[in-house]
Amino acid sequence: MRQTTLTIATESRGLHRIDHAIISACRELFASSPRPEGVLHLFIKHTSASLLIQENDDPTAKADLENFLLRLAPDDQAWHTHLAEGLDDTTSHFKAALLPTSLTIPFANGQLLLGRWQGVYIAEHRHGCHQRHVVCTIL
Image (cartoon, rainbow, N blue to C red; front, side, top):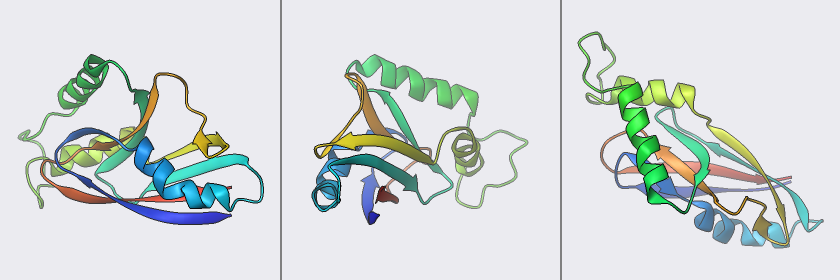
């Protein structure tokens, strides 16, 4: 087992593609793996962001998913009580409860074995800039 933690800045709410950053950061882990294939486990250490594998080619797919999440859990509702960090505090936790905080992706020859149109994303559920920490573990 090998492990590293990525720190990724998100500049706004929405989907932020990170598979290229994961491959770059894990290149040494892949190379030092006793076997050239295995699985990469990703875990985001936050309660207001998620990890997703989604469409990586057509930007309208990303926009539709972002709009769906906004409609699913709109900010600033009268019944929200957890507002310590702003009007998006409650809804960021709702979305993180519904979407995955970890992913397992097979790899071989230093590459993630994603489908042709798949990319790995941080789903940032908060407004503003945040530093997100993603633990990458090679098995």
